[in-house]
Length: 447
Image (cartoon, rainbow, N blue to C red):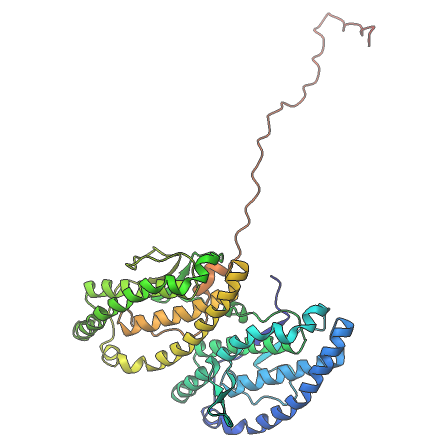
């Protein structure tokens, strides 16, 4: 697939000023007011752009520039507000901000897609609310209703990043990339909704950022699964997963005391016991297989023992190693931020599974972007669980990385066509000269 016409441009250096971060929401008040005013005007511009694009087949240049500047301003402001960038953003949406969005000029769009745009973007709204958050109305009585705001991954990342910056003066790379992924999807959604492009928002976290770290974590994800899905098993996926969910719950009853014994032993010796390490690792693999099957990230029916290498959607655990006793002693406290972020990623994998369920029934395939979004969420959940179970001393990495889905995003190598055997033909030999003393034969009369 060609490059998306709406792309996030990241030039951030992760350095943050503690003073401006501490008062970030207070400093953002002028931008909140300006955003409300600009959004009011952008609503009427979007209606005019819809009518013009429906008539002309492309967005008028003036309206395209105005709405593109609006999307750029929202992108920059959200990056500043949620600590994905540090400088104070401009009010006009001009280029040059550390977290910016590049939007291509107007191009032709299908009129049918333009006419139905308000319906076509509805599936993307669910993922937008999961990543960026969105308003919701809850009815409490017949006459009154309450207006609330759903918390998305971006809000959780910004909250955890605030504490990390207060402590270290830097935004962790994983949190910044997770925020950038959310902001990238939001920019592509609004560009699609405002008719700046007819390309659907791309939910793939690997495609959201141009430069992702290549990591070799102690708990990493390896994929060898194709995107094809069986419609029958997709339709009854939850029903088929019931035996695994029961067995997982029964296994969990034994895992809890095993984890406590492993905690005491690791605290005393600095290394988890080998038998307990193998048992807990098998449980973690099995849980991962079940969740991957349940959330449509993988297609085959998993086994019941969590054997390594038995599933195409697999986590690979490093060998047992020594651990810091201080980190072991306070593991339950240290894991709290990871558990909060894992909960936000849980909403992401649930949304991806719901959208993938409809896509799987319609096309017999899991969209790559949704599968990779689920892979990111499940990988972080596995790393958080492994960290709690003392299978590793390494803290979960919160952002997308290349090794998480490298096997699925790298293009297949081109194979040369097979060579056809060519029969050997000797080169033509010149005629031999006549022997000495003999004349050459006269030419034939037939010739």
